[in-house]
Amino acid sequence: MKNNEGFKPFIPADQNPNELNATSIIMGAILAIVFGAANAYLGLRVGLTISASIPAAVISMGVIRFILKRNSVLENNMAQTIGSAGESLAAGAIFTLPALFIWFNEWDMGTPSILSIFIISIIGGVLGILFMIPLRNALIVQEHGVLPYPEGTACAEVLLAGESGGAKASTVFKGLGIAAVYKFIADGLKLFPSEVHYEISNNTMRGTGVGMDVLPALLGVGYITGPRISSYMFTGGILGWFVLMPLIAFFGGDAVLFPGTDPISSMDSWGIWGSYIRYIGAGAVAAGGIISLIKSLPMIFSSFRDALKAYGSGAGTANTLRTDKDLPLPFVGIGVVAMIILIWLIPQVPVSLLSAALIVLFGFFFATVSSRMVGLIGSSNNPVSGMAIATLLFSTILLKWSGQVGREGMMAAIGIGSIICIIAAIAGDTSQDLKTGYIVGATPYRQQIGELIGVFASAIVIGFVLWLLNESWGYGSPELPAPQAILMKLVVEGVMNGNLPWLLVLAGVAIAVLAEILRIPVLPFAVGLYLPF
Image 1: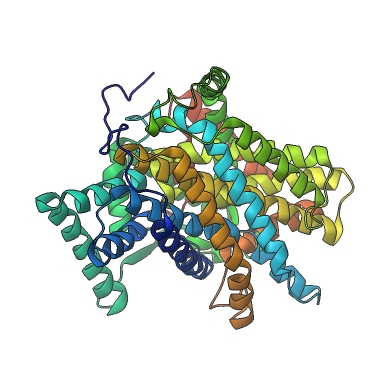
Image 2: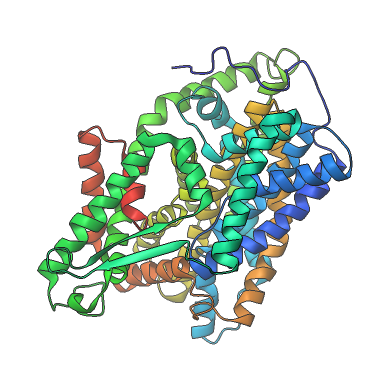
């Protein structure tokens, strides 16, 4: 169903203002590096990353519009497009690659090569962008009004408010000011906590808790996604924290149930969540992703067919509106083949050419799932780590089955998982940026080039950033606990050593299938089950 009828972008298609130029490229590249490094530290410190689209848009607008005195909403949009790509690449990298640093330290092998990290980051980043090119029409255009893409829509509102001025701009910047003051008082001055958690200790509900993250960013995302999607996520959280966790605490008693290492009676709610619910949630997210992909296949095939028809008839040139022009499909095909060959050649992922092609195919699956998820629930709630766990499960099983075990097999699994994780993160970010561009009237192929620039800018420094953080504090330390990377390491070791909690993963799959039978949207429900409540 087409939901874009009657929609008109802010900048009409027949106009062609400044967009991809030296100013937007330099500004965007600087933002990509800065936000990439900041998000790397934040994710490794607290286990969460944030979308940089809106902060990048505000900064670029302040520099380009108010300092350089240039008035171009598309130029501002391009700068934030390039800048946000760096943040997303870092978000994908930090969930997996620190596991290599931990292993290298345990095995007295020094540190991983910065060049290796650069190559893995480039492969994942480029593929994440290329996969979204043929999917743009199906997910961004055809489902406009169905998939809200919260951060993309909010970013467009910020850009348009700055362009329009007056009361509209005043409202947006008042909101930004209130949020900034709140963050300063809560997290800067520490006058009150922005995150609270209450452990429930009575016998009836022992093993669970309730908390709240009073964060302006999450409040804004919830406002944009609306009550329907938010309620599905909330329901998933209720199932995990107020049904499954009390049941585990009640029936577990003093037993030590794998993968936990302590008696369940001695665990608090976070211990039960980390040892059991997280695996159930990962299984639900993986199954929800597969179900979502199957349901999306007709629209994806239709989008590919339309793109091939347009290219074959020459409609991709003179007859296509500026706001409908993507990078050509031959470019996408050549780029994907080049990345397959690169995966095959790099020693960090010791796989055959066929296996490299299967990795890319698996990456396309998660790019599609990631785009749909961020379209529904926003990039800040995109369970990239859940998709990485699913990837590591399958890839490690295949590597073990093919005889690649031990250190080489474990490092190969993390290499594959890193590529898929970065693909998912970049695909989600690209989707939000393309939604912003669709609303403001940007040129898609220029945005796609901008995304590639942002990926390269961030990839150049991400290896050095990871090395520097490891040298300063060390991954797994109290200063840098790196929770996702530790979990990925445990998953790979669990499969290789034959002690992964498959029953928990399969329980999550069963919950996702049951939700689909009950006509509950699986993805937001599964994400709510996976994320802390």
